[in-house]
Structure formats: C-alpha cells, structure tokens
Image 1 (cartoon, helix red, strand yellow):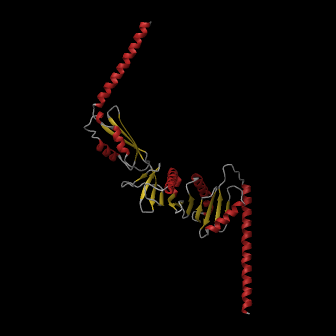
Image 2 (cartoon, helix red, strand yellow):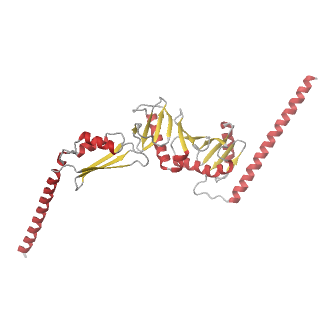
Image 3 (tube, helix red, strand yellow):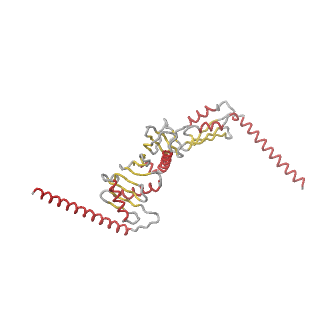
Length: 337
C-alpha cells in the first residue's frame, strides 16, 4: 500500500512538472512570435467619440513598432501609461490573446458639462470633475455653464467648491433625459449660485447652490406637471426653487420682493399639501411630503377660503383708494374756493 501511494504521488508530481514545462514552452514560443493583428475597443462615451481607433493606433505605433518587434519585446505597461496620458483616455488595458492579436481596451472619459469662463475660454468636465480640452472633431451635447469666475487650473477654495457644484449638477442633468432636453443653459451668478435657462418657456429659474439638488429638481418637475397645465408655459417670469417643499412662481411684470412676501404670508395659512395659491402676480405650489395625506375635500375647502380672503383684501384696498381720492378732491375744492 505504501509503494502504491508513493507511485501515485510520483505520477501526479510528474504530471504537474510536465504541465509547467509545456506551459513555459508555449509561452516562450508565443513570445518569440510577432504581433498578428491589432483590435481596438473604445467604451465609455455614449454619443460622441473624442478619440477614435486611428488616434489609438498612432499612439501605439509611436511607442512600439508592432510589425517588426517580437511579443516579448513589446512593453505593454509602457504603452498603457502613454495612452492614459491622453486627455480623453480614462483607462487603457492591453494584452495578447492566444492568436497573438493585441487586444486594446480603451475607456473614454465622459463629458457632462461645458464651462464658459468670464475670461472668454471654455472647457469640458467629465463625471469625476477632470478638466478636458475642446475637440476639433466633435462638440459634445452637454449642459452649458456660463460665467464661471476662474480660468486657472489651480483655484481658490470658493471656486473649487463651485466647480464641484457644476460637476454635481452636470452629472444629474446628463443622466436624466427630460432635464437634458429641458435645461438649455445654467448661468452662474456673482454670488456663486445657479440660474437655469429652460429650452421650453422664457422664464428664469432661481436654483440656488447645488445642495438638495434632487429635491429641487423634483419640486420643479411637480410644478411643471401641476401649474403649467393650469396657467400655460409662458405665464411666469421667474420660478424660485430655493425654498424647501415649494416653488415660488412670479408672473410677468410682477415685483419679486413684494410678491415673495405676500406668497410666504399666504403659505402659513395653508395646510402642508398639494395646493396652489394664486394672487395678482404670484403662484405658490406647495410640494407635499411623502407621508402627507391631502383629501380632495380639504383642498377645495382651503382654496375657497383663500379666494374669499383675497377678494376681501382687494375690496378693502379698493374702498381705501376711493376714500382717499374723495378726501383729496374735497380738500382741493376747498382750496379753490
């Protein structure tokens, strides 16, 4: 039994050594061969390619003559490093398959925003916030951010924080087909906040900074579905989504300060539900919380109450104006006598 066990172990040992020898011989044989072909695959960019197969081939041939060198003489790691130095290449992987074909896998950087600086220059940003140059081949259809205050690569902390907000908003808009079509431009104010310019509608959307970004876009989308069905697309001059759970909509020709004050006063009288409060110049759409329950009866009752209150205020204002005019007229008449 001991001899049989030793024989089996010896056979397994010989088999393992033979496998290693054959593998090494195959590797040596493969390494002594030349490159049979080159296959390039570019991923990462859905709609536009800022780097194509021709560019990749030129970069590879610049660093290695594949037609004359043996496989063992080709430094794949060095070629990968050179490819990744290219602005639009995020990652590069090279390897030879069993048919001596060089497989080149390129991951291209995905632009999510184009930034225009106050100095008159522009550049792209990718999803990680890496600054990318413009391309002569193609122009990316991405959100435009205008009036960025700094053109330097090394920026102050405030500008760096603002750029992170641009990346955050650019990623969100690019990932959503509705907002990608609706948001035509994002203007950066001197205060470092954002104002959206929509493709449909001629109003300015006051967005604030990039904090609570998802909630603000959700509130704006709710406003689109509710208020615009009632009043139309071009009724409002400004939409303000900076406040929590509400959208302040200012009608054309209205005063922003007075209307915002009046709207905020009206909000306090309302329950926390999906209600629309209208005045001469302002509509406030309250965005319901997930756990709030608003019945149709309560909505109708609250709307009637607000309409009656608005009429009462307007009637008082009208009577006061009439009384003032009569009083002034009487005083003038007395002077003439």
